[in-house]
Image 1 (cartoon, rainbow, N blue to C red):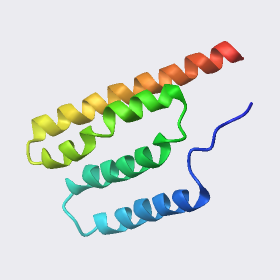
Image 2 (cartoon, rainbow, N blue to C red; image 1 turned 60 degrees about the vertical axis):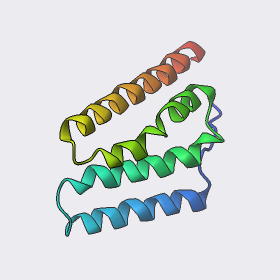
Image 3 (cartoon, one colour; image 1 turned 45 degrees about the horizontal axis):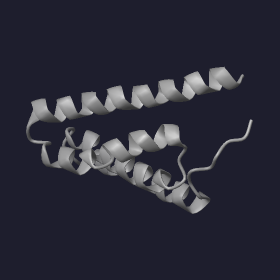
Length: 107
């Protein structure tokens, strides 16, 4: 099975650095900053993936990458923030289903 690489090694190391440093800084920050840091990593990964992603992923990335900065601004409104995260969870689940259904069809 042929897989498309969506990150270069350098991009992957940069993302690892963001995740690892975010984990460390989270020890000294308020707990509610953790989702913000994860969304920052999500935003960075989405931007790196966009130009090389398959059509199945590209639709998810294009439709949702713009929502992340808006969600950062809504962080103080817990209900809106939670609704935004719930929406992203549903959308990424749909993206996973698109991938798994196409893999099953080609197997």
